[in-house]
Image 1 (cartoon, one colour):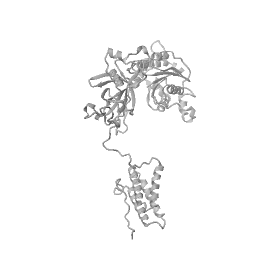
Image 2: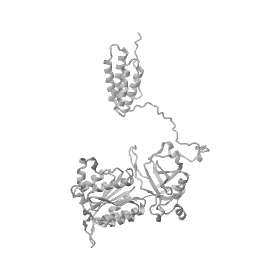
Image 3: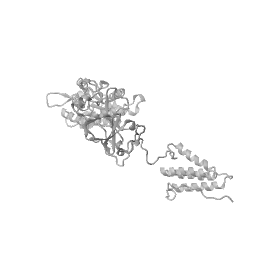
Image 4: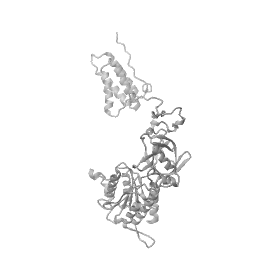
Length: 512
């Protein structure tokens, strides 16, 4: 998940902060100190994270495009210049352009906006931007929400008391809401000093940039790994009392399966798996695309120095064309596989399935899968000419059932008109009339749409009064009978509103 650091270099950031020592510090110095701390943490724990640096005042400037070279980012931070007034809208437009040009609109991105809480003055200020949201032409819309998934973290080089003396905090909260609500506003606790800014960026690191360490196990083999980026908690919507599901720190491989059998399954997220023992980009069967060749470590070198199960697993999956099913938590699974970055580089990846015992219907329940050796005969055949998948359900489902669905009003209108057409052709169409009537009745009861039954009953009574003198007398009896039964069902009487009950034709005898 790439990160854009957006640094406020307006004149308000040059305001001095009171220090007990002789050295005079500005708010900009505190911000640079906090960002340096963040970049050093990412260099040690998030080496594969792409980060860019954008500076802004009334205009914005891309100082460092997306890179993994954290020395370049820190050097750019140390050479920041001071400019004019604050214009956060300009900075957000810059972020939108930079991210879309590099990653498009589908890649999620984290934005770290560092400012002193000053909203700017007059036109172009955040206050003015938010007040004119609904008065803009289509070509001058406010850049939030971004066209790509975003988490925005606003780092204020100011304490909460200072921001609450004006409407700054309210405007920043509205800014966060417009971005989608994913993220947080951080303020400094206590006096403005190096210790406070370290504590503030420490909270950011803990929330958004803390590495996810886990142990990958397969039988008696295990390896310490880092999953990158950190898996987010998943909430299952169909649970009665949904609770966030988090990935366990013990990842247990439960079996292996051919890539062709698992195909391209639906997943919630994809992550890189890095062996902690090395935690560097490696080539060939390594775990990431390398940007600094002088720091690469090949898989053979890693295995020669210290045997690593993660490297063995990656190489095996790549050569055999298989994936490993891994248990992430109770009734929650994922798959480990090798993904090629280029002709020479590939990554060990883990994809997370939807929580549940049967995330891929064609495999059946994961807990019921077993080794081929335990099967009475080879499920793939002696020459691999067949496959046990997809698993056939015990009950054969029929897709030819005539299920009534009303998505649009026109569909309901068509069904009612069909009943009325058959009503005008009674008694010749008696069977068809009652078949269509019962179909509509069942659908209305299933949807709780009892008003429809009363309405169709009224229509049938009206049709009865409009029958011509030449009409068969049985038509009037059948229409009155059907209308009465529908109105009784619409009243909710259990005797007449049973779902499985059908309205039978009224028995008449006009033979004499």
